[in-house]
Structure formats: structure tokens, C-alpha cells
Image 1: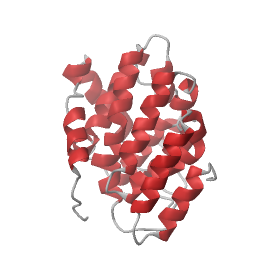
Image 2 (image 1 turned 180 degrees about the vertical axis):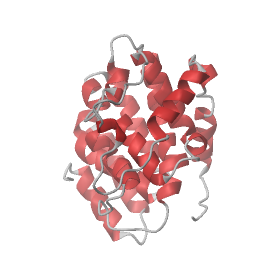
Image 3 (image 1 turned 120 degrees about the vertical axis):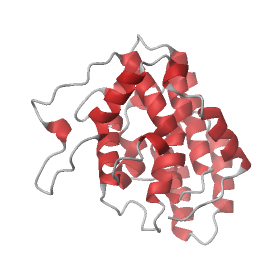
Length: 246
């Protein structure tokens, strides 16, 4: 795996999100540790098997919407270290359960009326760190055609903002739109192609809902200008700016 140099801005963001801990969000460390085991300490099924969360008799994790929001905040901010014991497939499988409502309600928890907006926004500020410290480095193993990989980890990274219902549920709230815009900007500035692909894919689907067309176009134009020796990524960015991705 190549070591890539972080920009000064990326280093500053790293310091800003380092404070998202169980203590800082008011989460019982035992609850967080149990949630990590629940999500990631799972066997990877064979090709004919199903992921654990599809099992009918699998008990749900007992946590309130606010606790789940705090769990996600700490997880996103500390994924580089906290998920280090788990394989790429285990990480992909657990994060799929976090991002998708196909087998549970985890991604709806931050939208629950009982969750203060400030707590949801703290979760959003931590979200880019998932790519910077975990998904980006893990997937930084050589380029492949955008959207072509079928492994669990890449699926989570590439499809997050296509599948994730959290922002869709809150798209009419200005603070959520601003937070989502910041997430995309931070991810596009990362030195990891997987993070940039995910952000572009998300912009292609959700860009119009950010309600900042001129700012979005200017940012995309600037991103496209700085892409070097990667025509596929440049073309994908141009398509994303027009909302033409699948």
C-alpha cells in the first residue's frame, strides 16, 4: 500500500475530528465496543451463503437512535484504528449494514426526532474520516475502472451516497445540505481515488439537492482542472457535475 502525503488542509481536518471519542459524545465505551463486535466481528459467508444480518433469528442491537448516532460518529472518526482488526470483507459487510436500510434501520437513526440536530451534524463532520483513514487507504491498491469492482469494501465506498438514505431523509433541512456539501468537498480533496469516486458518485445523484448550483459547478471545474493523467476520473467528474451517473 502506498503512503500518500496529506495536504495541510487534510491534516487540519484530521486534528478537528480527532476529538470524536466516546467521552466527547457521551457514549458508554462498553456500548461502543459491543456495537463494533455486533457489526464487524462476523464470519464472511461463502459464495452461496448470506450475510449475518439477513438471518431471521439474529437479535437486533439494543440502542436508542441517539446512541446509534453517537456510535456512528465515533466509528467514522476512528475507523482507521478501530476497524484495523477486521478484514476488508468484514469491514465492508459491517459498513453495508450501517449505510443501507435493506436489512435494518441504522441509517435512519440520525433522522429520528429524538436526535438533536447538533448531534447529527457532529456525525456528519466525522463521516469523511471514514474514507480518509479507513476506506481510502484500504482501497488504495491500484486503479481499476470506476464502478467495476464487486468486493464488499469497494461496494460500500462507491455506493454509499447512492444507497444511504440518511441525507435523502433530511435534504430539505439547510444544515444537512451544508453538511453534505462539506463532506463531498473534503472527500474530493483527499489523495485517494476511491474517496474521490465516492464523492463524485454522490454528487451525481445528490448535487441538485444541495441547492448551490454555481458553487457546485465552480468546485467541480476546479477539481477537473487539477486531475492529471486520469481521463476516466476527469470524464466521470464531468458527468457527475451534470447529474449523469448511474
